[in-house]
Length: 83
Image: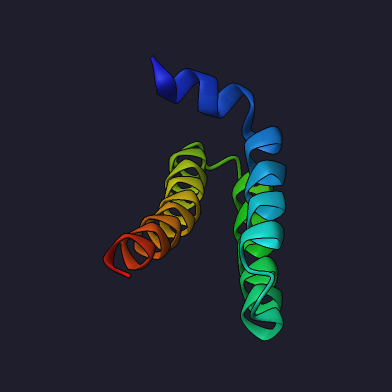
């Protein structure tokens, strides 16, 4: 059920990945720039070649970016509790 939604909204999920990367990688601009270029190339090549499976990859990258941010937040809270 999720896969047809991803394929139908491919461009929006691609733009969401770029926006999420922009905001979650603010502290390391060099890494952010490299990831933005890489993700942008992945999105464009997948769209131009009509590779539907790239929609799943984009969704996975969104989950990884948000999961990394959530883990940092949890680690921060854990350090606060230990003090």
